[in-house]
Length: 210
Image (cartoon, rainbow, N blue to C red; front, side):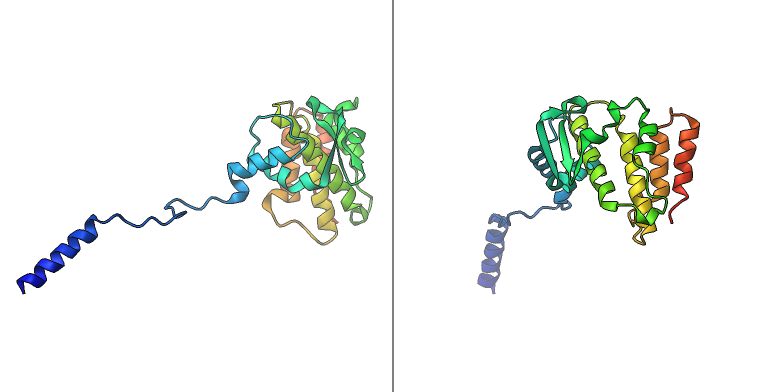
């Protein structure tokens, strides 16, 4: 009996003293989503021809870079705002719809340049998407060098127009950040210094989704 107890005690002691096996890649920390990890942001920055600087991009902007980079081509022989290469998506080139080259205010330019068809559902959704793509790409490039963010007004206006068109065509966006009313607020907030009559036009457009 004594020998049995002694043997068990020794075995228990050896087990306690033995090093614990190490299981690779196991951690007690929450899993990091790859789409939001620093590695993905760096990869997007390295691959995107329009991200020319080293300033850290906000998560939302970094995500947009990942989403559009395969649709964008850069003309490095021509630059636009803050030295960002002229970008193209589909048949749309940013330099052809560059608000900064207009004598109009950013909101005036957006209202006149990015108008929909009278019958909202007949608007060319792909063209609006290409226009938004080049604005998103240029915004990312500007942010990467900590440039002026006046581009946010026409960018949000384009997002609002796309949401209106999708809704009119029977495919309303489901994400909260892409709802028409939310984007109306984004436009008016960023264009708060613009003429009230222009802001009222944006608000009125937000009620027209059919």
